[in-house]
Every structure is written in C-alpha cells, then in structure tokens.
Amino acid sequence: MKNLKAKTQKGFSLVELMVVVAIIAILAAVAIPMYSNYTTRAKVSSEISKLGGIKAQAAEALTQTDGSTQKNNLIAAANTDANTLSSGSTVAVSGSTAVVIDYVMDTAQVPAGDIRLTGTASNGAVTWACAIEGNGNYTSSTVPADCTIAN
Image 1 (tube, rainbow, N blue to C red):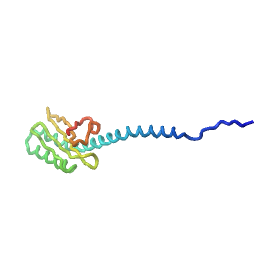
Image 2: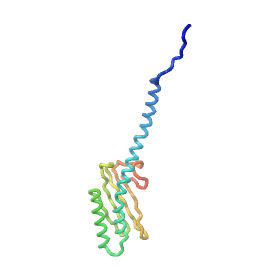
Image 3: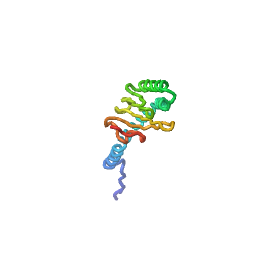
Image 4: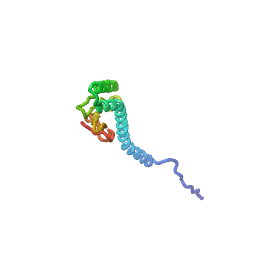
C-alpha cells in the first residue's frame, strides 16, 4: 500500500512575492512626492518664522506716529536684521500704511525664491499678507496655506 502524504508548501511562490513588490512600488510612487512637498512646505514655513522679530520691528515702525526719526531707526534695524538672516533681504516702508519685507530664502534649505510679506496698517493693527516668488520652483502644494505664489 502506498503512503499518501499531502505535500505542504514551504515559503511563498514567485507570483506572491511579485505582487507584494508591486504593491510596495505603487505606495512608494505615491508617498515619495507627497513627502517631498510636505518637507518643502515645512522648510518654507521655517523660513517665514525666522521673520517674526523683523515683522514686529516693521509693524512698530509702521504704527509710529510721533516722528520719522524713530520710524527710520526701526526700519534701519529691521533691514540690518533681515540682511543678517539672509544677504540681499530688505525691509521698506511704503507710505504711511504699508511695509514690505523682501526676504531671500536660504537655498541650502529650499529651492531658490523670495518671501514677500506685506503689512498693511489699519486702525492701529497691522495685517500681513504672504507671497512666494520662486521663478516656477513652487506650487500650491509646496507653500504654506496662508501664502500665495507670485511667479
């Protein structure tokens, strides 16, 4: 009489392994660009956060009503601080109701581009608007939600 034993499979078949590799490749193809956009957006946000002190100086200068000497001193200090952060950056008051901060981003961290923060004074408060000028280096998915793209 013959001994009938069932054969048991040991390990995975080649087809099963190829299916797993294909699934991982599809997930990676979707995840890597999304992660890249996320990291760029986070780095741009970090560059914007560096400007907090300069925004405060510029806002104070904009709301000064007691003479131009103090206003000019505040703008000069803001310009010095902006250039210390990144060479070529400027802070300028435009009239009595607006201030513009042009900041050249650190290209070691993010693609080449400038951050333009425009502060507008109204009733003693300053409202800020953000625009990213990146010569095509940025899309809506790579800039913070509160910034616009001005290419």
